Length: 155
Image (spheres, helix red, strand yellow):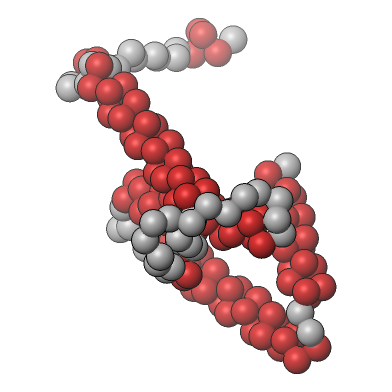
């Protein structure tokens, strides 16, 4: 079910891109799609080929930070789009600055929204570290519960 949902979201995303693009931009959308497929194929090959040697836990830990960065950027750009559409207000900061490629605009709404993304991450980080600190570590093989099945149990 999750795979179908992801495919559906991807189709909707590209449909939206093509709807907003003018005819001269279709090749850019197609090129981006092809580049994405190529990078995905390379990543899949690397994961399959070197899965024994690749530290999967570190790989997924790195993707956590990638998703955090993506959430930060998307939050800033979403607030900016809502401000341009006059759906939410626009209160400028006392200092004017913009870092467009990460979605930072000099409005209180945008900065506070992006800081809230970081705050939520920090709360989850603190909670997960405190949960790990309170749970007793497994230090030896005898800590695991052993289950044995005999031929008489199989009947």
